[in-house]
Image (cartoon, rainbow, N blue to C red; front, side, top):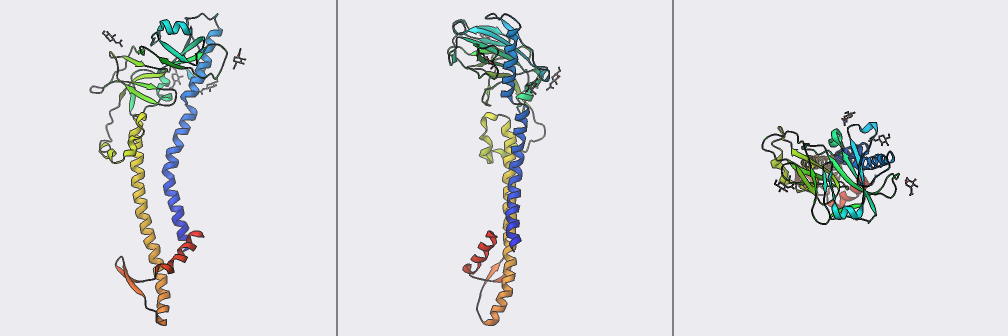
Length: 323
Ligand SMILES: *[C@@H]1O[C@H](CO)[C@@H](O)[C@H](O)[C@H]1NC(C)=O
Ligand SMILES: *[C@@H]1O[C@H](CO)[C@@H](O)[C@H](O)[C@H]1NC(C)=O
Ligand SMILES: *[C@@H]1O[C@H](CO)[C@@H](O)[C@H](O)[C@H]1NC(C)=O
Ligand SMILES: *[C@@H]1O[C@H](CO)[C@@H](O)[C@H](O)[C@H]1NC(C)=O
């Protein structure tokens, strides 16, 4: 019966590992090839290179080039004195309308505001399951302007102290009736927030990051799924993930169902193992009975089998699990 114990252990490990291996192996691959933060870093470099082709003037927007593997994206950069940004803001920087009262941390004398337009790469770098983009994703990031050839620069922390930054989108795609377009904001730390749209096509923000307008996709098929979701409170835990929660719900539901099934299988296995060893013992007991020792009889399932005392079975079980 040694093989049975190990079989049980292997069985349990196999069946509990498979779902977690699957759910863990997908995101790292996606992040490796399409990491938004890696993109920010590459685009910072390419945006700064725009200055080297000119004698950079403060307050002038320079458009940069992007590497050929990012065709479809565009970058721009503008260098501003912090004091001027705080006093006057910077209006009409592509989609962005930057109000006065902007504070950056740590304080630097001059800042470079880098603009990203992700075009057809929007949903590659910022996938939102369950939503479709009505606009490309655009980004605004602030850097220290002290070294125009710096690479891999960290962003400055940018905050508004009075009015919010406005992002004025021009051409929204078409969307089906009955769904409400929403603003989506991706912060620099992987967080996602949804907000209401102002005046039909304007988003607002108190800080830097990436922005777009999305609508929830109408899912035609999985209608029976949503009513089951509330049974698993874990599914709601990933609140900031937005559409991701629905998929998570499926996973959780699947693994709960799998767990129940597994537990049932294990119970059957354990009963079977017991039954097997019971039969073995019956053999021994028959021998013992000939010697005249009385044994308790109990019902296991439908069969009446002689049952040995717990103390007699313990050493056997311990040996089985150790080996
Ligand atoms: C694109 O190519 C550049 C080099 O030309 C490389 O540094 C960068 O990592 C590549 N980016 C992507 C997203 O493949
Ligand atoms: C975006 O379009 C360009 C050509 O305009 C293409 O080279 C690039 O592969 C496209 N990107 C994606 C993610 O489809
Ligand atoms: C600017 O950054 C580049 C690249 O990181 C570095 O080689 C250079 O020394 C820096 N220049 C100054 C003045 O810090
Ligand atoms: C929305 O439109 C109203 C009226 O045209 C205007 O007063 C308001 O400033 C607009 N809001 C934004 C955020 O642009």
